[in-house]
Length: 580
Image (cartoon, rainbow, N blue to C red; front, side):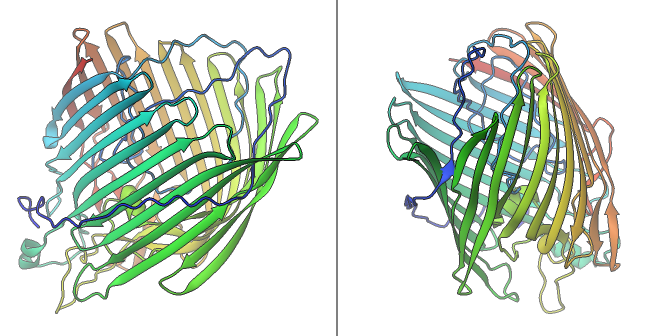
């Protein structure tokens, strides 16, 4: 499919059927002790945040953040794309109380706006957000996002343009007893398999016939509801239909009810999960159809305890996983033991625990993490057999906080990206068969991680945060932990100069990764990434704002994936209009 044809596709009709499966089980709920000297009240704050599609640009790391520095620009509604990264832990340690807590301003309703920006490489960004109050306790919101580029990376032999457009519609009813909401999301993406190795020998005729573009479509609907005074605490559900222009399709239904019981003065919280996945790949005629169907049913019961001011959660997680395509069923049982202790006089919290989880790998999640995947994936779940984690967090002052933690994670069948070999033959050829796409390989992986972070915040003035992660890997069945870095660092800062001018900066570093060069039959290093980005916005009037972005200031054509160089320095100028 060439540039003029990429919008042409055949839509598949889909019937969305949401079935809530409520399963009784057990997880804990911590009881808070009454401390006479503690006058800080606990409040629930709901923040609406837009989905931030992974199209920051197709050639840069999706870890590169997008600033939103204007003070009156809304927190956007929930993220559209969910990262395909296993949840590290179900445990969220309590934050240590600050030594001197500043009073925060009241959160205002989100502001309606439209914005448009353009820059070199033909880069375009467009956004529109509308929030409408339907009544005293209900509202509707709509979000539109578009990002695209005409490409233009040096020494690329085929098209490298990309396109990403998404919409999100949301309805929320803030009923006092049973608040509930509905969402509808749709996304259309087009990317090119432009990562041809310099060592690839290809004729001019093959290069002319090569159509590197491929298209993703994602449509999903979801809902959530919260109950009061019932044994059902809350419930969430989502039905996703994901497909591409290579006749690959995937349906994923997830329901997550949470139950709440009290037995002999012991409170029990029981989150349950039903994850149903069904899909198939039909990439080319010379490749046989690959189907997959899997149902995961899990519960995570636990009991809260308190001993000498140490809060414990003792329980386990269990999953029943049925591979209906291959008539295979497995039972997984994981530990779920957690503990926290607060040194309140010093603003310090220590925490630790051991947990486990079963992660469903999907085509959709793979496409989020790597836009250059082939429509030919061997999909199976990853079992996080156990993860041991200990850490320390606290506040050195009312403005400076920190966290240090170490973990050891043992995973079975961890999904790793690796560049595919040449798939083409004399009789059959595929657009992704020139060693220019990625697939999954699986390996039992033990990962050690040490993380440190510092955050400094001056209320309504500036913020600065630094996070560094060190990793070690031990893998079986594979030579290397493919495409996983040993070091990552992110430095982020924002500065409010005055009522009109805001500034921001980002710096990130990702260490070298390993991949396999199938053409030369050897393991190679994918060079480290160092990127600096700046951004600023200026309020022309109360309704009009101008903004500018400069990305990749170091002007490096670094590779996030093997043979996929990024765009060099990028500049973007835009205007935003805010309205009621």
